[in-house]
Amino acid sequence: MATLSPDGCRLAAKVTTDTSSVLRDTIKAWDVDTRQIIWESERVHDELTELKFSPDQRRIATSSGSEIKLWDSENWQELLTLPGHAHQLAFDSTGTTLVGMMGLMRSYSTDYIVLREARVQRWDASRLTPKIEAEQIVDALSSNRIKGILPLNSEIIRRIKQDESLSDETRTAAINRVGELRREKELFKAAQDIASTSGQP
Image (cartoon, rainbow, N blue to C red):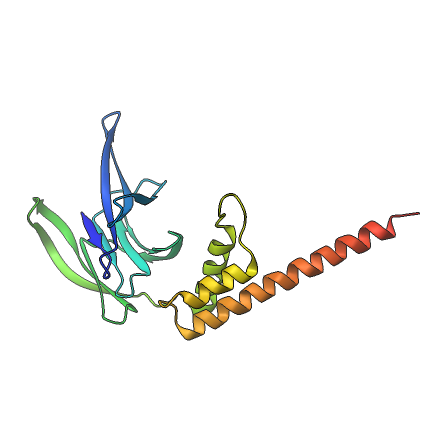
């Protein structure tokens, strides 16, 4: 089971390993050009049955166990959990609605799945607001060390401005978030300075 990003640059796939006679489903993602693994999930996905990139390739939907999850395909943070389980998933053209084929599995082969009581379920996949998305983007960029060094605010803002996949609203919210964090750090440092000087004789 695998899904290719719309731009053809990344491949995400289910990887099943046999550990002590127990099958474990995890997810790995590769850069198609370099063939290097760029991400590997640390958690085990119970009965992973589907992977799907969103049209803007910024999210991946997975179905496993009794829940469907949306993940940020850049930093692989969990964005949203939806109730239910689907054997097939598809986004609409806007990426705001997720559709799944549900039902009780009657038989399965590598070529097809036969379901009993098959039905279609729709979920709202747009609950990630620009503000929340901006916070997650900034948090991920801020913690992404380059040669062991955390990036400067100017570098974070530059990367946000260059990310063409972001909406204008999300981009503005992310830049504002960088400013908020900078002011919070300045206030914290000022408070520390006051505390240190007040304690001097």
